Image 1 (cartoon, helix red, strand yellow):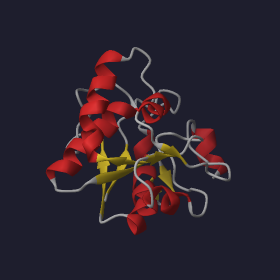
Image 2 (cartoon, helix red, strand yellow):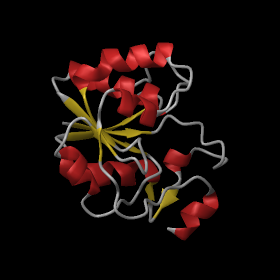
Image 3 (cartoon, helix red, strand yellow):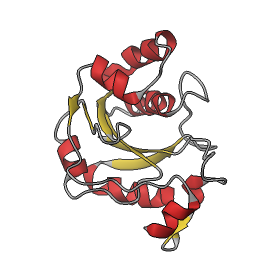
Image 4 (cartoon, one colour):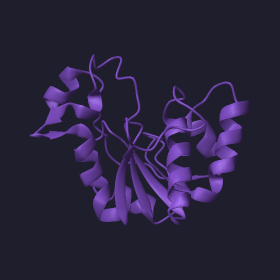
Length: 166
């Protein structure tokens, strides 16, 4: 299983590159990668310059990042991808382990947290091209992914003030 930190967002509410914002001496994207690492064979960052590109192109939000991650993982021989957003430096205990045990699965409290089989790439690309309202939750439900609730609040960072409260 490949772990992928989705870091291709616009950070419009944050006001600067959120993935590079610093918490406890490290960038948020690096915190997210560290959260993933114990659950995967390898953890990478997607959506940044020089990393895994979104598919079928930029500007499609998390679904484009997940599609790029699925394509990249399949090319490396992985059969699934565990995804997390770059602004989730801390997660409820056991959530990623629960997601990792079941593919395909997602967290309905934060649908970008998911475990996706690479075989779903074609379905995802079709969904992106044909469904006007692109949401990870909508796609997850369409492919029958198992919802796994967080069980506790998931802190994320949308503004500099959110970062200050962590």
